[in-house]
Every structure is written in structure tokens, then in C-alpha cells.
Amino acid sequence: MDPVVLVLSYGAVPPLEIVENILSEVNQSKESTSTECSLNCYKCIIKTKYYDTSINLIPFSGKLEAVPEKILQATEALIIYFDSKDTSFIDTIPKTLAKNEQIQLGFLLTSSTSDEGGLSFGEIKEKTNFFFDIITLKSNAESDSDEPEKDYEEVVEGLKNVVWSNVKFGSEHKEEISAEELDSQLKDFENLLLTAQNLRNDTSLTREQFLDRAEQFAGIVSSILNDNDSD
Image (tube, rainbow, N blue to C red):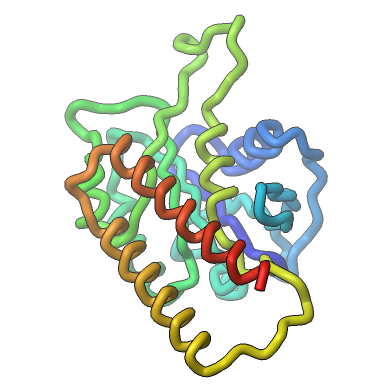
């Protein structure tokens, strides 16, 4: 099975509507197939400068803790819609994520922010021990009919910035490298992991600062991948 993006809702917007909006954003068909667990699955083609691959968008009408284990094991990204005035669902997330470390991306979608029940980045980090990008969707009253909806553009960009498990870089035939070259590449990889971890754990960054740092980090990764591919 291709990597799964699990879509849940704890609010008024159904998971299927979220999936359809993502597919509309990338101009792809909304045809579904059935998984082994009898859940509807929507294939989404991801095309970037560095790779093309496919992922499965799976809308689930129940709660996170009720998702079939087979689906959770294939899940690499999580999208959750919620009512900003009711964030009680947050408490159920850490236990699920602790058993599924392959989940590397998360989006929290809401239609409005609440002064009383709003969530800051720090609060999300503290309660879930996981990085979620919070996106506020426009309501019908707020949207401008003359302007195309861009609510899901950020979600799609996030999906394109993930190195999915089924992505293959470079050529199939590689020349053998020396032990010294391998050791050097491993050290570069370790440094990248440390940089990514520090970036993810730095809750003092504003959203703009985080996106700038993430873009710089992506450039470094791209440079290393291109260097290795040209060897």
C-alpha cells in the first residue's frame, strides 16, 4: 500500500469534503477504491521538482483511536479538522502517535479561531508532543467569490515537502563507494537529522521564521541528494 494520509474530523466539516478539496487543489479526479479494511481510499499523485509519487488519502468518519491498525501502520501524515472551541480530542493523540513513529506530518484545520479556546503552537507541542501546522479555513461569509479558494494550498505544499517512504531518488545502478566516503555521508546525514530535530523542537520561532528555516533546510537536503545522484 502507498503511504496513507489519514483524514479525521472532530467538527462540522466531513473528512470526505477535506479529501475532495485537496484533490481539487491539485486538479485530480475524486475516484475512490476500497482498502483491505473496507475504507474508501483516494489516490493522490504528488509531483515535485525532485520526485513524483502517489499517496492514499483516506477519510475516516470515526475517532483517531478507532482507526484500524493496518491503516495506522501505513499512515505517514495526519490531517484533523476541529472546532476551535472544543480541543478535548488533543488528549487522545499522543498515545496513538507514540505507537506509530512513521507519522511525520500533521495538519490541524479549523474554520475559525477562538479567543477562549484557541491553540497556540506551544500548547499543541506540549499536549501532543508532535508538530501540527494549524490552518484556519475561510468561512463562506469570509471568502471572496472573485478570488479562488486557497485554503488547501498550504496543505498540498506540506504534502509535497515530505519524503514519503515510497520515494526513490537517483539511478538504480550505483558505483561502490569507499569506507571513507560512506563515513562522510553518514556524518552528513547525522547532521541533517540533528538540524531537523532542533528545528522541530524550537517552539520560540514564529510561523514565518519556521517556514524560512524549513526552506533553508530543504535546500541543504536537495543539494546533498543532487551531489550523491551525480556521483
